[in-house]
Image (tube, rainbow, N blue to C red; front, side, top):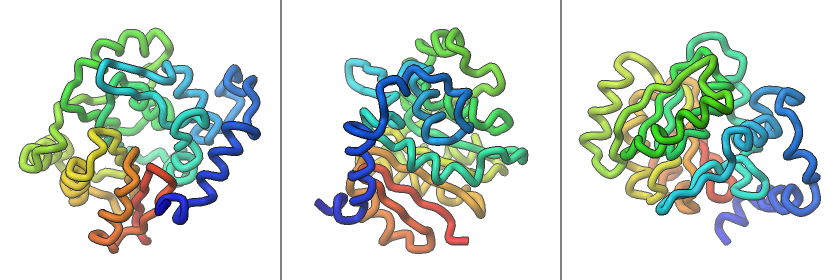
Length: 233
């Protein structure tokens, strides 16, 4: 109920997209028909790289589609200021599973430093060849590092070693989804955030309540199960 009262338009749009607004033929469209980074482009690119991915314990590839989480419009809105920027961006994704997200980001930001963090990289490594056969990583390829979201000391150390002097322009937390892991990860990445940034946290209704109050120096938005932090400037 809290989520509904904060973002009713998101749920109305989600219902409209799922049941009325998007014809089934859209999912067979070519993504080249749409502007990179747009809602449509993000949905079709996720589908291109496998769409919904299931393992025994996890599921992924479900963030953009209106049939699933429907975060595509939220990503399109907050990524728009970064698309087409030729200065080298740094993007960090935590929780990469089979890598469809990394494939999207490498296509969308071909000159960016794209970093994938996960406690178990084997899911991606086992799927990388399939992604490459589908066309992924031709213009850019991600860096991969092991990362434990539930160990604050190790998380901070890994980021210090990996980022060195780089600032994080875009961060995505699609990892454990529990508040403890979300807070540890946010606190570890926070010192590296660029002056202008977008930080996406997926799949937890309580993120906004927990983090927005503790970090009022940032601007916070919630759209159902996704929360986004951005700089106020």
